[in-house]
Length: 624
Image 1 (tube, rainbow, N blue to C red):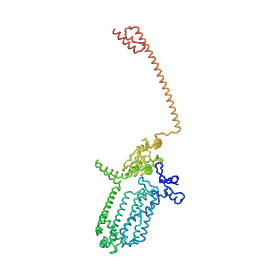
Image 2 (cartoon, rainbow, N blue to C red; image 1 turned 90 degrees about the vertical axis):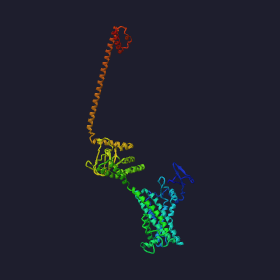
Image 3 (cartoon, rainbow, N blue to C red; image 1 turned 60 degrees about the vertical axis):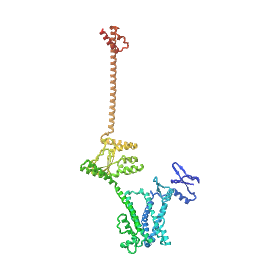
Image 4 (cartoon, one colour; image 1 turned 60 degrees about the horizontal axis):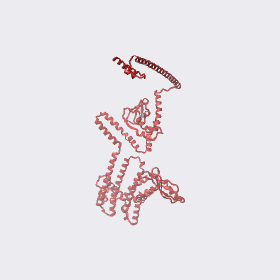
């Protein structure tokens, strides 16, 4: 017996009857028993279904978008035809309306059948998970989600209420025509619109302001139409029940404005719809000409409900349009706020008028940088993989011109470059002084050394990695028009390299080769031939030998000096010793032993003691 995991994979065969749930790691397996292989036809279809073979993924399906587009058109048709049927086509005198003809009924029944087929299709269409927003592809989960959610509402909306009422009217009389109001359940089909919007929200690249305006226009159109149908339904209800005969708004309009009708004694549903649509329009937009008014208490009550509803709808539409208008052009609003701050600063500092004009022009040109500066903020909110994809795509034109940033550069390094790029604007006749900086000219024209630099030009590419100022180009072009510039400073680039060791080593090797090349080209390093190199080596060798000989000679001279000094010291010590011995002999011979200091003199031979004793003895002899 094979088992199937609800995550879309088949497990190994297990003994029959072993249907207990099991767990592998953090994933819980819910086992579903599949039929035996003897049922080849049914088993293969069911197995394929449970394996997700028939699941339709809206992200990569080719058929589903066209099908949903067709269903959207049917929803629009139903949203306008169903209220019209309820409001104007249930009267016994309106049997000649085209919606009562057999082709029209077959067409509407066919549209209803397409919605029934769409219900079956929903059992196979993947849906986004409400928590993690991933598309659920497990067949049983898709079926369970639809049956527990939208199935009942879709079933009620697909039920052929019009055919049921027509059958009852044909078999049991016209008294059941009023049950045509049950057709309003068909309007539940409009609840499919949010599901379709969620399904294709990621594919739509239209600004949300335009989408909101479209939504408001659709709401306004539906409000006009539904309120007109509501006003017509009040007339239908009165005529069906025989209320206020001859005093309805339709009767009054036919008497006061016969030009609105082809037949003065009989009105058609479309003529009444035109008048009701006119009344709903002037009611919703609060004009209220007063040419179509309520002629009874019943109509007055209905009109009050319509006025209250239309007031809320119109207030919502006006408020939404004002809110959209306030944020429709966010870059213009931001620029106007910046210009207001600039004007206040210039008035406070009392700047000259000419300077004020140039500053205003400069800041007006900075409007184009609004979205570029937002790109970095948006990039930081992406996942690392998507950051790399977007950064490479956006900066591909610039990186192709920077020869040391090849395709082997890591995505993280490319993202770091994208985040550290800065933007600015230069006015005409100003020098673009950005030393040690990679500059990319996004728009405008500049001139450098009689060379014109159009949009897309780069300079300072090699200055970005060099360290010796004498080897840099230090190009400073002149702005011929307003320039929009994208630049990367050397300081920011080194900070980025410090956090990417692999790229730092590669760029360091490139820097060494580039430094040597520039030094050779600019004459800082002289290129020699092989013969000159051998001659230089010979000279170097001879110089080394001379230096070695001089060193040896110097060492010999130092040794001679040390030897002479040692001999001089020995002779000097010898002469001092001889003189001391003579002094001691004379003292022993001529001086009486009564000198007390000589008794303390030992045979140590210390000259300091001898001199001290001699001085003391001399003082003694002098005093005696």
